Length: 430
Image (cartoon, rainbow, N blue to C red; front, side):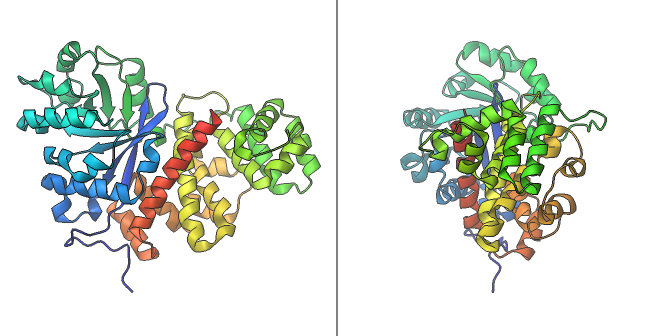
C-alpha cells in the first residue's frame, strides 16, 4: 500500500501540508494566521521561484481545507509571489472578505499599473493588501503603498532593511498605512516593539513564533496561588469520586465558582433552568467538560505578560486538532485525553518553568505524559502532526510519514476546522 504521506517531487499534484503562523494586534489578540505550504513537500514547479504555481497551490489547498469557514471569524494572510496570481479565478470568484494578500513592493514595481488595477478591483470585494518594504524608496512607490493597509517589515531581513528610518518617509505621505512586523521570534522582542516602536507610528500587527517561544526558566519563582488552586481542582476531578466533595472544593474558591456558574448558565451549555449552586453546575457540565474548562481557565487566570489569550488560542488549536485526527484512528474514548495533550503542551511557556516540573503537579494518564515528556507513546505521532503544521521540518515530516497512514488533505481540513473552533470558543467566552 502506498503511504499517503509520502512526498513526490515530480508531480504538480504532490500532497502538501498547510503551515500557519499567528498574527496578533496591539491588544495581543489573535486576529488571523499567515498560511504557507511546507517547502519540504513542494514539487519543484510549485516553489516560490515559479511564483504563480506556488500561489495557486496555496489558494487551492486552503479552499480544499474549507478556509471560507474561518474568514468570518479572523483573517487569512497569504504571501503571494506573482502579480499574475491576483487574476486567479479562485481568488477573483470565491475568496473575499477576511483575506489579506501580501506582496513584495519590488514585485509591484515591476508592473505598477497592473497592480493598481487589480488591487482596486479586489479591495472592492473586501480583500486587503500588505506590501513588504525592501529597504529603499523609488519613484511611484507612494501610489503602490496607498493601495495597501499595511507596510510589512520582515525582521528576518537585515536591520538596515527591516528597521530602516526610510519607512517613516512612506508613513508620512500614506496616513492610513500601518506597520506590520513579521518574524518576531522572542517574547522579549515583541514586548520591546509593542512598547517602543522604531517608527513614527505604532506597530499594529505582529507575526511570528514569539507567542509559543520559551523564555528563561524561573525555577525559584513559586506558582501563583490562584493557578495552584485550579491545579488542585484538576487533581480532585481525577482523584475524587464524590461529587459533593468536589462541590465543597469549588465553594472554597469563590472566584472560580462565580466563573463556573456564569459558564454553566451561558448559551453554550444549552441549559434550560438556571444553575445556582456548585452541585447543579457540576451536574450540568459533567466532569470531563469541567476539567477542560478549568484547563482553559488556567491560561487566563492571574498576572502575566498579556500574551495569555494568544497562548490559549494556540493551545486550543493544538488540543482540538489532536482530538480530531487522533480519535478518528484511536477511537472516541481517547478524544478527551488527546485534547488535553494539546492543551498541556504549552504549560511550560505559560508558567516559564520546565514542562516536567509543571506536569508533576498534575494527575495525568501515562499516554499524555509519554507524548509530552518522552516524545513517544500512543499519542506522540499525532502530536508530531500538530507540530509540523506550526513549524514543520523535513525530519518531522519523515517521522510522520513512517508512523502514520493519513491523507494530507484530511489533516489540512482538520487543521482549519481547529482554527475555526478555537476562534469560536474565544468569542463565546468574551
